[in-house]
Image 1 (cartoon, rainbow, N blue to C red):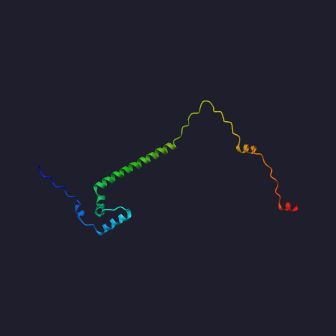
Image 2 (tube, rainbow, N blue to C red; image 1 turned 60 degrees about the horizontal axis):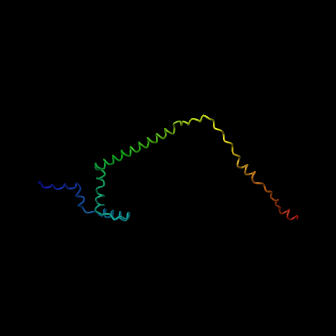
Image 3 (cartoon, rainbow, N blue to C red; image 1 turned 120 degrees about the vertical axis):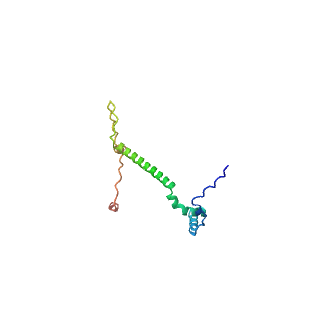
Amino acid sequence: MAPKAAPAPAPRAALAEKDPTPLHENFANWLTRETGYEVDLKTVQLAAVLRGAFQKSEENQADLEQRRAAAEQRVAAREERAQERATKAAAPKTEPKAAAAPATPKPKAPKKAAAAEEATPTVARPARRGRRAAAAS
C-alpha cells in the first residue's frame, strides 16, 4: 500500500502565520466594544487581510451572479403581476344579467328629522326679564 500524500498546503497559509498588526488589534478591540461579542484576534486579522481576495474570487463572483439573476427574476415576476393587475383593472367589467321579474321598489322610510320634531313637544320658556323690567317693578 502506497503512503498517503500530504495534503496540499492552503494557498494563503503564509498569511495565517504572520502576527496581527496593531491595526488588527485595535479593530478587534473596537468590534468587541461595539458589539459586546468577544472576537478572536487571528480571525479578525485573516478577515481583514483576505476580504478583498475573497470578493474577487471566482466562487464569490459565481454566487453574486446567481443572486443577481434570482433578483432579476423576482423583479420580472413582480412587474408581470403588476401588469396583469393593471390589465384586469382596465378591462370592462361584465355585470350579471338582471332577473326576469322587475324588482318591487322599497317604500321610502320617513325622514328621521321630521319624526323627531313630531315626537318632542315644544315647551314654552318664560320671557327673560331685563334690568329695566326688574327696576320698574
